[in-house]
Image 1 (cartoon, rainbow, N blue to C red):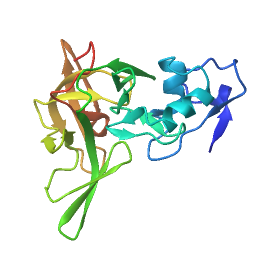
Image 2 (image 1 turned 180 degrees about the vertical axis):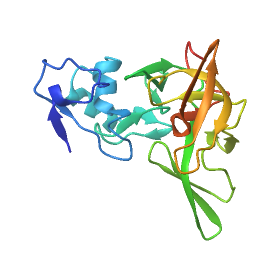
Image 3 (image 1 turned 120 degrees about the horizontal axis):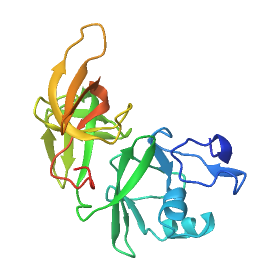
Image 4 (image 1 turned 60 degrees about the vertical axis):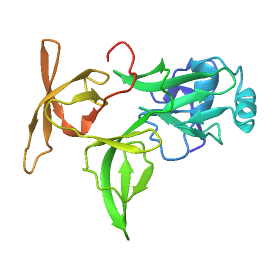
Length: 221
């Protein structure tokens, strides 16, 4: 999908739904449920571009980075926990889920990216990790499925275990940053986690939780 009607665009898209007829869709590894196309980030979120044409020029000039790599198309997705850098103005933002919306938190630690391992397989002497954002990461190091990787020139494992700080990325508590108090194994049902934020406790699917540490997450951290 390259374009869709604005009125039918995902609710987290930061757009005026009656302003134009169509809006760019997403291409690449990111899901349109938890990401927006780069053109919306440049035009509707930051105002750095006034039009899709200007956004294309910024990207052609190599000025927009996602997790340290150059974005090459205005339709490439920018999603949860991605770090987006505008090189020319030296600004960087980490994408956080906030209920049904995406929040773009300006950060000073753009060299750090955190990703959750969704699945893994072996190819020769390497492990190939499928990450929450749709990307793959290869290494000879063995890490646990469900853990996070803090990428900063090397990969540091952040375990999703009892006592860990976690970010809720889906469900009714999406955007909350809390402590994982208990992991509940449900056998045939999906495993859940009991988390606590201040004096509030709730249970959510374990897959909704990303272990986070040593990164800027905005006011909720």
